[in-house]
Image (tube, rainbow, N blue to C red):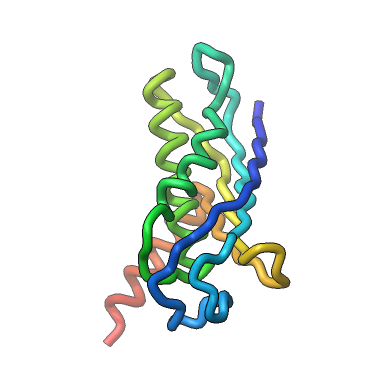
Length: 140
């Protein structure tokens, strides 16, 4: 059976600068919105959960604590997708010795602005992307 979890929330970033034109204008402490969509097999821990979804809120709060150079929504989404996948995989493996994740998608936007960026991970797509990146690196 497939289980689907959606978690959304907000986090504030404290940017040293915004010279990368990431859509925040001159704002150095913008509030970002996120929506995390996770699809897994019904492999549950002893408490009956796939994963503690509050860990997603904690992830964003910890990741962007303190001042740092501004990152684009693309970079925030890609990094979050990879990190959250690893967190869920570690949780499932630690409790059950196996992990089955079908899809993870993380959407990031600045507040409720008009633009959003989504990074998506699926097992098949990650292999295709890795192969394509290797081919690009080999180009003269």
